[in-house]
Length: 117
Image (cartoon, rainbow, N blue to C red; front, side, top):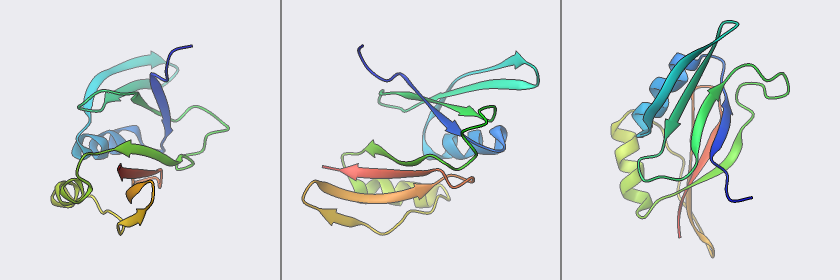
């Protein structure tokens, strides 16, 4: 094994979620019809790492169940300011011995943690 390449993010409305993640700063990799009324939407973080795909077809992954995935940033406060300007609400900053954190949630409640080490 080498690494995680794609994380499935469970959403109720793929188009609404796609717009949120584009505002967040991710880039669209592909949007392809899969048949059976399903669409593969894959987005990438601007500086690499695992991509995400917006899924709505896994019975055991209801929309909003992704919690606590961590996104590394060099400057948490600058990132929070950029996201706020893009219309994305961020949580308060928590300082811990292992870094500073702030949370953001997509329209379904999937929660990500921004971390500055």
